[in-house]
Length: 320
Image 1 (cartoon, rainbow, N blue to C red):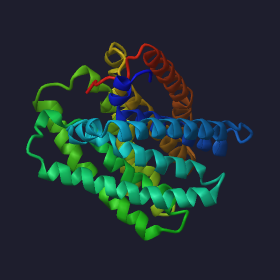
Image 2 (cartoon, rainbow, N blue to C red):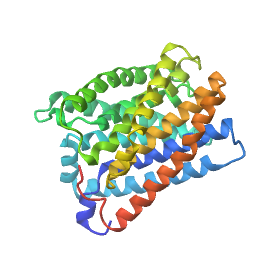
Image 3 (cartoon, helix red, strand yellow):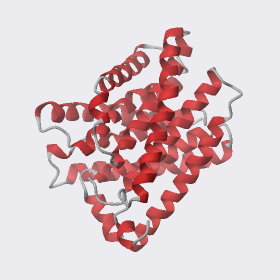
Image 4 (tube, rainbow, N blue to C red):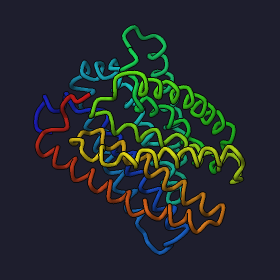
């Protein structure tokens, strides 16, 4: 950022990029486990993701110190408010990805960020309940971000031994996912369409069932019962539904909201690889292998477009 004005308008939604890179790290951990154990890609991705997170924390922290009024305006914004938990979700994903490399650090990080995410969830939902200015056109799939964070907590929480805590967070996420899903489909079907800059957030619809499947596998000991199958196949259907509209999405101009493509695609890829292992299905393994190639390409494209936009001073402006 080259000016105070740029820093003041630096959006909290940048943390969605950390979610995407963390999701890609988890994809390659799963690939290493099932297919390519000698490829040390995941540790490198984790290091890069952690470095990006530190840069964003420092940058947004400077904004908090120098332009607190701008931060308060984001907290009061009906759309930007939902991106604040992307910070704690990023930490949850970093803790999950780091569990196999530095369990002690991952444990401390998971404890801290689970509490932080609970505070974010309580704040966001309190704001939703007490608002005087939200309208139906304000809701969009970004509202899932606080929910997705709760669903993700058990993935590392169960291996760390916090089973009841994991059930607590999973219950919050899975119940309110259903509530928000109904509201969002009502908004999409019966009200004005989402503006172009928010259309990529439709991919966030994939994240709750895909992440929910991964979390539920930890909670129920890896058994493929009815709920596990419903979560996975619902996520798979939503992915297919959105991919049928790929041409429409590709015609959109670049916005920071394009990072909404990344984490959901990574989540359903990881879920598909795990499901293929559970049912020993070569077909699903091939199906999961396709996005293993696609997701890195998507994230590389997003990274390049983001760097170009920053170079042109086009991302740190108010776009939502």
